[in-house]
Length: 229
Ligand SMILES: C[S@@+](CC[C@H](N)C(=O)[O-])C[C@H]1O[C@@H](n2cnc3c(N)ncnc32)[C@H](O)[C@@H]1O
Image 1: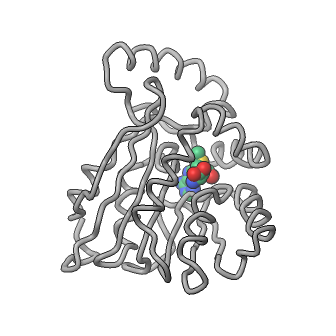
Image 2: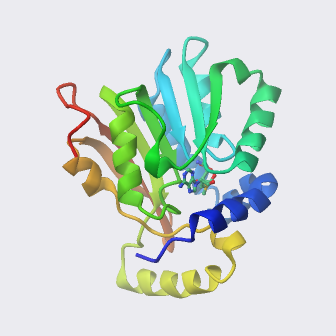
C-alpha cells in the first residue's frame, strides 16, 4: 500500500479543495461515489438512529443519513478539515437540517467518542487517505453499539493484474498532484473489522475498473464487547 500523505499536508489539501470537492470527486469517479454513498446509507440507517459520519467532508453521506434518520435521528459529522465541514454546514442550512446535525473536527484514527455511542457508523472514501486505515476501521467498530451497523465505501485495488498495473501507473502521475489524488489510495480494511468481531452483511465492488470502490456493511454482534480488538 502506498504511503499516506502526512496529516498536516492532507488537511491543507482538503482546505484548498473544499469548495470544488463535490464536483471534482464526482467527475473523477464517474459518479460512482454517489452510488456507494447511497448503498451504505440505504443498508444501514433507520428512522431515529444516532449516526456518525467519520471523514464526513462536505456532508454528502451525512446529509443523506440525516434525511433518512428523520426528525428523531441525529448525525455527527466528523472530519479533519474545518473547511470541508463548512461546506457541509452551508448545505445543511440550505436544506433546513442543521438541528439534526453536530459538527466535530479531529483525527478519525483517534475518535473522541465513547465506546458504543452510535447505532450506525459510516465512512465513505475517508479510510483511503488515512495514515493507518486499519486503525481507523477499528475506531469505527469501537464507537458502534452492539447490534449497530458500520457502512463503508473506499478505494480498492483493481481486480485484474493488467488493471492493477495500469492503475499503478496512473496513480504515480496523480500522486504528483495531491489536489488530484486527494491523498486517496486503495486500502483493505474488512479483515481488521472481522478480526474485531464484525459480521459482514454484504460486500461489493463498484465503480470504474481502474478505480474500483469496495462497499460493505458490517454488523457488530449484540454480545460483543467494545474492548475486543
Ligand atoms: C475523499 S474525502 C471523502 C468525504 C466524504 N465522506 C465523501 O463521501 O465525499 C476524504 C475526507 O476524509 C477526511 N480525512 C482525511 N484524513 C482524516 C483523518 N485522519 N481524520 C478525519 N478525517 C480525515 C478529509 O478531510 C476529507 O474530508
